[in-house]
Length: 198
Image 1 (cartoon, rainbow, N blue to C red):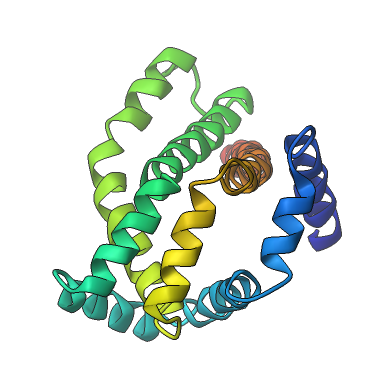
Image 2: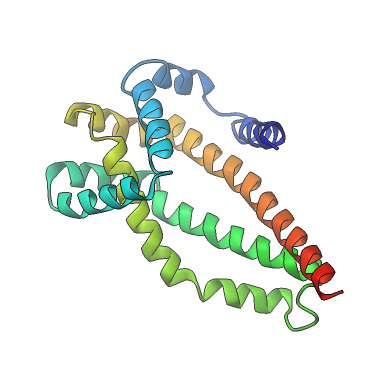
């Protein structure tokens, strides 16, 4: 339900922004390169729906390694903690899905919440590798049109309290949304499994 998803995401985003310097955030993203960076990320998200484009972006990111632009992308990723935050989100989503299966009765006493955590944590290395690859491919493609000066501006803003605040709020909003979706999916799959067994 897109409307429900949007309402949940915006609600969580608004709560996460409480007490933050909203004016500084609006000022930055109302002018370039902040405004442009948002549109570039949206365009890249849509483009990544095509596997061939994502594969090409991954190859381009690998080829760019060691270049000044790659170093800027790395600096941007690190200051925003994009890899660790995405890994954490993926692990939490996987746990939420398994917990949905567990709570829905699909595991028939073969697991416990504690064992689910162990199962999810066993995926950490694989998730870390795929996440790092994806983040570099995405950021390298998205920000390719920006100048070096624009990239420096994005990095500088990300280092400010306002930049950290909006980044943190975005992750909290999406994490809240996707964890709920993952758990609901787990519950629905459990119900389908139970019906199938009957």
